[in-house]
Amino acid sequence: MALITSPPPQALTLGSQPFRTFAYTSIPKRPSYLFQQKKLRKTSYTLATDVKPRFVSSCLKDGSVCSLDSCSNSPSEMVKKLYECINEKKLKELSSYMSEDCLIEDSLFDEAFIGKEAALKFFKELTQSMGPDVKFRFRNVYESGASRAGVTWHLVWKNTKIPFTKGCTFIHINNEQRTIQKAQIIIEPQVKAGHLILGMMKLVTSLLAQYPAIHKWVMKLSQQRWVRWVAKICVLLYNFFLHSLLRSYLTFIHCASLMFVFTLKLLRWVKGFFN
Image 1 (cartoon, rainbow, N blue to C red):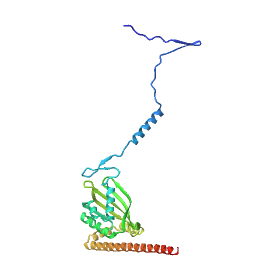
Image 2: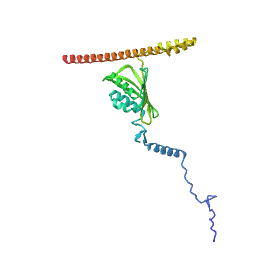
Image 3: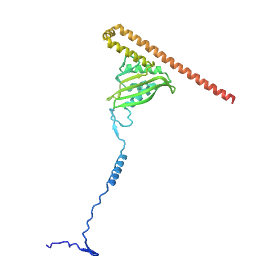
Image 4: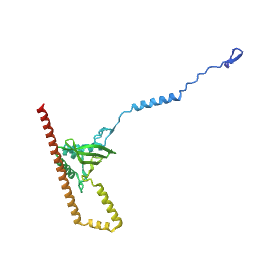
């Protein structure tokens, strides 16, 4: 077998200086760093724009599907439905959102409402005391995880905000049944006695620090049955006068609004009479 050898490089003469020519070999192109960065950013943007909203299965027993953004049985939706049923006086629908062993705590009452029957009785009294014109209006709705939510609200009378009626509600949902397990309602105090309460707290803490025996005496006294009955009577009287004050306040607002409407109608009639 003959051995094939490549020819020697030829000499190229330009003027008096000879140059040698070599065989040409193609070198692969390497893109620049800036070109690679632009291509990477373009690819990332394409991937980001191609993302679509996903759907996940809810916690319902029937395995229904709901979106991440708007789930019908999410805690925020549950607390909204709770107050929508109260505004529209839909107690039967409200009953379907409450669990059998639910617990309702209201800051206006010294005892909690335990059980579905007691909770529905409380909401029935609430809707009756609100009348046809008083409604709850949401301010902010918060959600924590898959079982907790909170809402801040205030009362309105014919779309007019009622002063000193702000409050907030926190609910805990049973994950298995997706019903309200616990609700805690905190209402704005009608009496703004913040400085007085802080002063009394400072006085009591200073007395307890100087005379520790007072604390033991108060604890023994609070265990007496007659002291508990006196405390319950005071709470009942306070609630009675508070509800009476609120009812009279709503009546005053109603009369004032009627007078305002009558004055506007009278002015309109006078203007039309002279024109």
